[in-house]
Length: 158
View 1 (cartoon, one colour):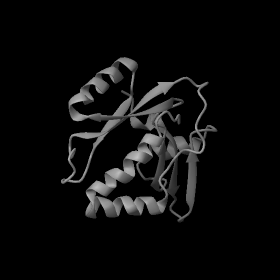
View 2: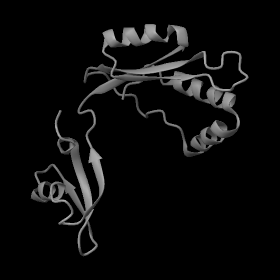
View 3: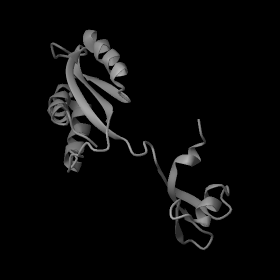
């Protein structure tokens, strides 16, 4: 495993005069090399942009399943090369399938020729406020709101 500095694309630092200085790996910048390894001598690093998965396109796959069938999807995902995934079970303690049924979302690498889905589906700021409110006040409503959104993202490539 390499040092995390290998995945730094750029950073910004505040120099001793108070100016914000942008430091990028490319084009080759001597300041980037100095700033990333200088332990604060050139200024305070305030932001860092990391390259997490270089050049990989991922297809999102979403399945409605139950906890007892979840391992089937996880095992299949390991065979098919899924990089990651998560299971969100039904919320709302009074729901008949509470903590039993949910959706499993996972990510599988695809080739560079696979077209990207634009625009990417994202929750709007007001939707995030609703998610936050429902998470604290009406758990069953949170699952009812989130599952159609997640199912609509099945098959998308990013």
